[in-house]
Image (tube, rainbow, N blue to C red; front, side, top):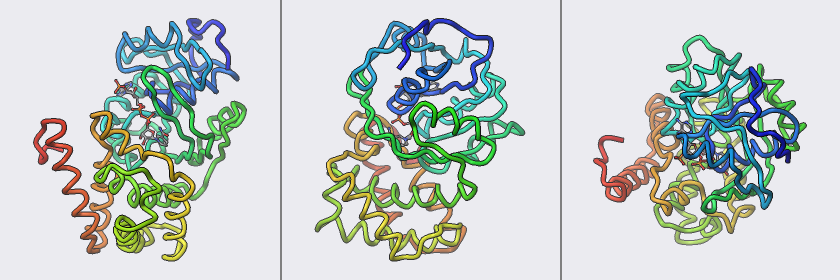
Length: 305
Ligand SMILES: NC(=O)c1ccc[n+]([C@@H]2O[C@H](COP(=O)([O-])OP(=O)(O)OC[C@H]3O[C@@H](n4cnc5c(N)ncnc54)[C@H](OP(=O)(O)O)[C@@H]3O)[C@@H](O)[C@H]2O)c1
C-alpha cells in the first residue's frame, strides 16, 4: 500500500471512490498501491482525518480525500455508500465529470442511479469482498471477487492489478440477482433476531431462511437468475456455512444504530414480486417487522422509509 504524497492532486484521477467507509477505504488502500486514487468522504472533518492517516488492515495509510464540494475530476467513479445515500453520492459522482459511474453497493440501486445520472453511462456490479469498521480502523475481511458490467474494463483491470480479483461479467444482472438472493435470505433474519450468520443453519431460524429462499427463487428466476431451486438453496446455505462467524451488514447496521439497507434489498424485492404477481408473505412480514423496529430504534416514522 502506497503512502506517498496522498495530498498530491492530479488534474484528473483514473478512479475515484465516493464513500469512505469499510469497503471504500479497503479498496482505496489497495488501489493506492498501483496508482492515484481519490476518495470522497461525507464531510471535511472525515476527509481531513483520511489525509492525516488511518489504519487499514493494520497498515497506516494516508489517502487523497475530498468532499463533494471540492471533489476532483475522475475517469471512473465507484460508489460505495450505503443504499440510503445513493442519490447524494450519485450527484457527487456526476459533478466529477466521469466517463462512467460504477456502483458496487448491495441491493438494487441502478434505477436510482440512472435517475440522477441521466445519460451518463452507469452500471451496478457485485462484490464479495468484505470489510468492516472498528472505530476509526478498517478491517478488510476477504478479497472476494468483484464483477463489473461491460464498459468497466479499465476498472476491473486496475482492481486486479491492486490484488482485488475482478472481471467483466456479461450477465451482470443475473450475478446481482444471485447476490440479492443471498442477502434477502440472510440479512433480514440476522438483523431482526441479532444472530450471527451461522445461526441460520439450525432451528429455529433455518425454517425461516428456507421459506425466504422458496418464495424468492421463482421471482428472481423470472427476472433472470440462473439457478434452479435446489441450487439456490445450496448457494444460500453454503454462504451461511462459509460466513458462520460473521455478522451480516444489516446486523452491523442495527448494532451500530445506523439505518439498514432494507429498502434496496427486501423492499426492492417486494416490488419485483408485485410485478410478477407472486405471493411472498415471509419477506413481507420480515420487512414490516424490520421497518417497525428500525423506526422505533431511530425515532422515525415507519411509513417515511
Ligand atoms: N462492507 C462489506 O463487507 C460490503 C461487502 C459487499 C458490499 N457492500 C456494500 O457496499 C456499500 C458500502 O458498504 P460499507 O460497509 O463500506 O458501508 P460504510 O462502512 O457505512 O461506508 C459508507 C461510507 O459512505 C459515507 N457516505 C455516505 N454518504 C456519502 C456521500 N454523500 N458522500 C460521500 N460519502 C458518503 C459514509 O459516511 P458516514 O460514516 O458519515 O455515514 C460512510 O463512511 C453498501 O451498499 C454495502 O452493502 C459492503
